[in-house]
Amino acid sequence: MSVPDKSVIVEERPEEGVAVIRLNRPDVLNALNMEVRRALAERFTALADDPSVKAVVLAGSEKAFAAGADIAEMKDLGVVEQYQRHAERLWRAIAAYPRPVIAAVRGYALGGGCELAMHADIIIAGQGAQFGQPEIRVGIMPGAGGTQRLLRAVGKYKAMKMLLTGKPVGAEEALSMGLVSEMVEDDAVETTAIAMAKTIAGMPPIAVEQIKEVVLAGQDAPLDTALALERKAMQMLFASADQKEGMAAFVEKRRPAYKGE
Image 1 (cartoon, helix red, strand yellow):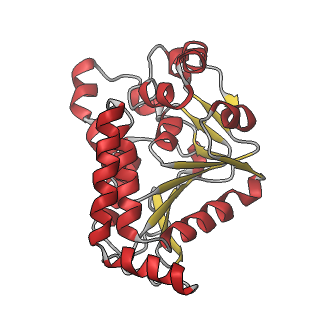
Image 2 (cartoon, rainbow, N blue to C red):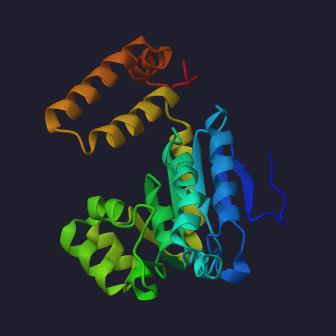
């Protein structure tokens, strides 16, 4: 299913098993208003129920992945109005997506845009990309994971510097601090992300989902608990047909044909 170009997001299917979800508000650098957030939540919820999609690439435009929340929409809100928006429910649809998400970041990923990128499992950044949480500069603070996901990605001292100064970091610094998985030329960002998604889409689907589930569930658990989660998930995979196929193909020196069974 494709989303019309007039939509605030556009869906593309460049490779078998791969969906690209593209933010489509280039006139405002893909600022995240509530319409965009609802559209993203709807698409990720639908894709979660579509087993033909095995990996998602989240992309923006050449100038901006997403330059932040739509300040014009937010500036006059009161506490109750902000609460009643329940944006956290919309973000949750992305966080709960069971298969890998790759953020393809060109240009600005600021504020809500940086938070959106951090909802992904892998971040591919162009050399000209800029990451930041500048909310403090407009009198507020991050509210969609910008403090907590950033802390877990880069550690206290790097996170505090970004959060308290509001200054962005370039792709090279983001890579060195652990916020980015890979840095490539700007014009290679999406092809790299799609190629990686295609590679993942060719892996055994149940194992892919279990890896993502265990990594996310275990990252904040005590080590013994996390290791138990890992061990049980690995043992469970021995009940899958894909485990039998993968190991047989390895022994027989042929390409495996995974079916997600």
